[in-house]
Length: 267
Image (cartoon, rainbow, N blue to C red; front, side, top):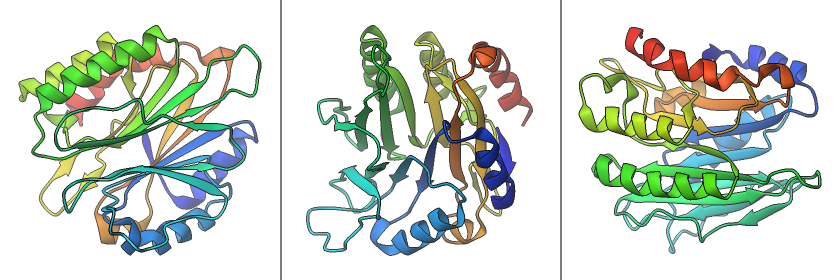
């Protein structure tokens, strides 16, 4: 993954063409509070993302704010705490099924799941999951449940994309055994992380806690989009991926799987 400016991102999405499928993630740190900024970012992009995933939405049953975005349907899983929560905005141009039956039944983890129906007969549908794992949630218990879920989705032959704020710092995989076991679990299920750069930067630390994983062998490239207004408020980078079907790049994921630990280790 690389850091992209807004202008460079717009050029990349334009070059990807109209058939590219784009997915955006941001740790929003309160959707009602920062919805205007999210809308501003969307309208600065030359092409609206097909899917917008947001974490730390801080929504609950008492939320009175209208968090709709024009042109999108919104699905969300709220937290029982004052923080957390996960949500997915999906373009109304896509045939989408809400999948509340897919879930992680573990304390301090929220996840939202949708299924996007393929437009081509006989093609696989795509499952997209947005996950927020609270920092105090047990990593090994989370990994155990996610392992079972990924095995099930693979058995059903779904194309799957997972993204969100997992609060598991991949830069610590050589010194923190739960993180190493978690990363090994992903590889064992043929899910490969696409982000290798720090996604949260403060005055004293750089961490890779916002992740994107997929079992799809057709990811052409992954962008880490820098947008200064969001960084000022959230101190998180915004993630944007473009999916492009291309036979010439079937080995891309396999290549990443061989290199990513080296990339993370050297960063």
